[in-house]
Amino acid sequence: MTQAKLSVEVDNLIPTADPTYIPFGFSKDLTQIIKSGIFYPTFISGLSGNGKTTMVEQTCAKLKREALRVNISIETDEDDLIGGNTLVDGNVVYREGPVLTAMKRGAVLILDELDRGSNKLMCLQAILEGKPYFNKKTGEVVTPAPGFNIIATANTKGRGSDDGKFMSAQILDEAFLERFAITVEQEYPNAANEKKIILGKMGKVNKVDEDFADKLVTWAEIIRKTFKEGAIDELVSTRRLEHIVNAYAMFDDRLKAIELCVNRFDEDTKSAFTELYTKVDSGATLESLDADVEDSSEVSY
Image 1 (cartoon, helix red, strand yellow):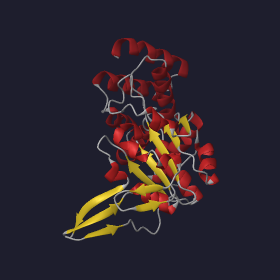
Image 2 (cartoon, rainbow, N blue to C red; image 1 turned 90 degrees about the vertical axis):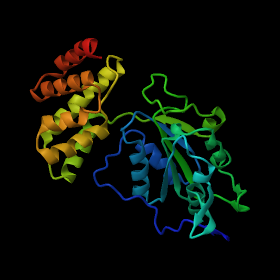
Image 3 (tube, helix red, strand yellow; image 1 turned 180 degrees about the horizontal axis):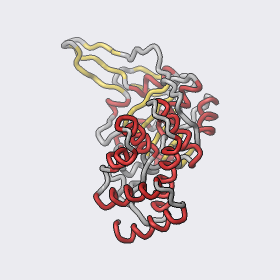
Image 4 (tube, rainbow, N blue to C red; image 1 turned 120 degrees about the vertical axis):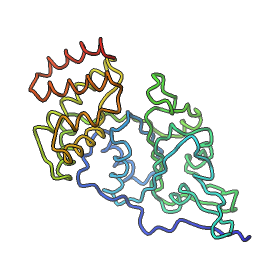
């Protein structure tokens, strides 16, 4: 068998712009970081479904910057990230990994779900310092091209999940985490921005219903407020609201869309969330709904 080298050859890694994307939260500061061209590894944490990864991709799309996204898991290792040997047509071929490809192209490397990784991520130590990388498997020295940066997203800050909500989240090495210049917490969008997001998604599926959008945002806002207060263990993410919009476009039934999309929760949570929505849809006030959720949480959760 012969050994060859296989590099990633892609003409354009600039993400596709989403016309329905609404910037919020850390978006403005992230734009400044990427626009600066300064190597500044950034760790973005936040609850599931609040648009962390989308924010990075859409910021790159807006700035016409190439981005390479790598989904991290407990199995991710040096071969997956840096590169390794593989068999192609009977030949042993060295396939370059996404990290080196991003370095050479001056692209933004998105390490998605970073807190799902293991100590195998330590192979990125030198790269997280912005230094040239010696690839021991090929003998090549890779110097980061101008504009190269690393942005990580995760549900936790790399210290595990104390409440057990993210069971796959790992405790990452302190020396590894220290190489990220900043860590930021991305919250869910405020009500005004979330309504814009929902209306944009409704427009995308030709099912604009402003009244339903208002009610979905109110419903999610009450659930999240109660979650923060520790009265319930589950919440409704912006991503789940988008799933509801798509279900509504298909079935033209508000309550059916709600029920289908909260089926992932346990029976008590599902019933409480569905009941709360029926009250929102009937025009109950925010004050009375807050009280209802708190009362039901004492019984149902």
